[in-house]
Amino acid sequence: MNYLNLAVWGGLLLYFLVKLVASVRIIPPRVAAIVERLGKYQKTLLSGFHVLLPFVDKVTFIQDLKEEAIPVPPQDCFTHDNVKVEVDGVIYMMVTDPVLASYGVTDFRLASIQLAQTTIRSVMGTLELDRTFEEREVINQKIVSVLSEVGQTWGIRVLRYEIKNIVPPVSVKNAMERQMTAERERRAVIARSEGEMQAKINSSEGLKAELVNKSEGEKQRRINEAEGRAKEIEALAAATAQAIETVAAAVKVPGGEQAMSLRLTEAYLGKLSGVARKDATVILPADLTRLDEQLASIGLKKI
Image (tube, rainbow, N blue to C red; front, side, top):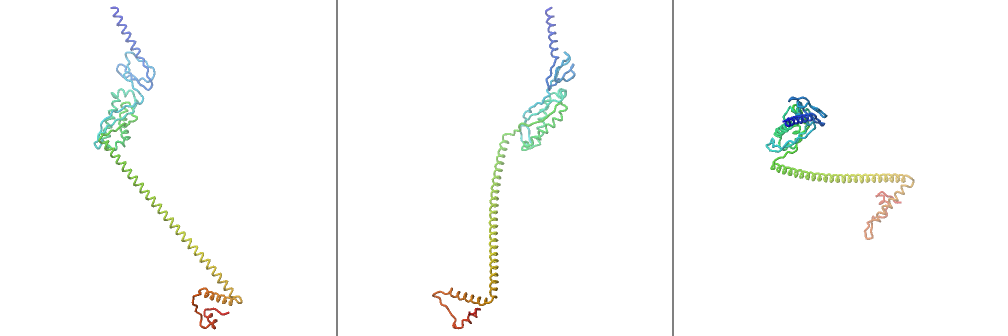
């Protein structure tokens, strides 16, 4: 009987020691512990050394205050044009109020995932398949906005949401690949045609510039030739005028008129001798005795 009592008291002592040790809590940084006293919220323990009342105080929740990434499982969604796609993502969030995170919702992580999935389905239903790949940022912002509305009630803060994959059916994927191939071929054809067009434009512009340069050169050549002929005529006219003035001045001097008549007579006779050949027939005046009258008829005088 004594051994039985000793065992009972030993067990009670051991239980008391375990509770006493459990009442000492060391909380690491960026972690909060929720303490309840007799089933009622008592306080929140932050990082450091804490001693609780044995058998009275109890740590019921431990909340991590660091940012965490919560994966959202893939789910099937229907787009506005009735195409089924599989969408998954990641929620980046952190606990801002440990008390609300413990008592405001049963499991804030599961609740955030469920709310994100329902929001994704509603947003994807408003977009066509082609736009879902372009409007990722819009979908992300919409989910963050919806989660932020309940974040104050749940004691959490949603920092961002990122869509990981949008997977369409295999048939749609093949059709999209064919469409992309056709689009690339169309762009290639357009690029080649634009290149050929630009090459022809450049060639025509070069030919045009060549013709313009040739016409400008021909125009300048003709202008230069005309200016040269004009200067030549001007020089000949000036020389002729000077010669006439010289001759006129020479005629006015004593004996100048007789010398001019003699010079013209010699020139006339020289022309006659120059045009006559050995076998040529020369017609002479009938009366050579009247040579002075013949010369006078052409404006010359016998000296």
